[in-house]
Image (tube, rainbow, N blue to C red):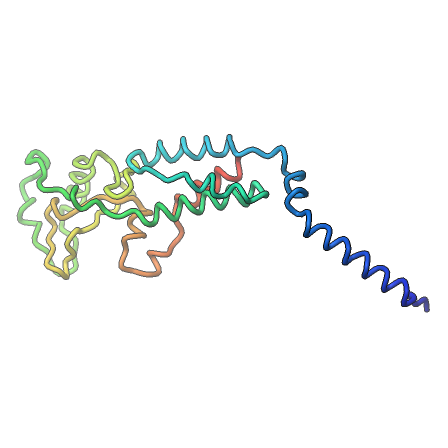
Length: 208
């Protein structure tokens, strides 16, 4: 069998150590050289257009774009920016000053008042009419994030819960998108579920 000499092993380890020191010392210039042509202009443009169109009433903070400039890898930087936006979305607070004070009478119907009273844990018989009235009253938008929603995927939320004495008056209901419904849920498993906004923004990263 052939065995490497001690001198060869020692010299190889020495060269590997010198290479490692060189790479560590000059890592920033090396990374800049590798990614010198990378630009995030297209990505930032796509991101802003999507957010402004999808969440027209939310003013996202884009300072992360400048704060992430030290990251030489453009792909990691994109994900860092997107994760920051998602975190901002999660921290949006309900604007309680905009809670509905009244609902136009033309959105009421014959059995409206009668079915406002809770019947144990059952939804009112006219629940779909209430969803439709809610949908029309709030102009097809999620109360929390302002995104446009579909009536079939809309999630009505009670401002004052049944256990706290809440009733099914339209003034006690707000419409939510699926993401906001999860984030405002009392169910921890549901609250930490997958968000559509994450899927959409990650798609922008991958396509830019």
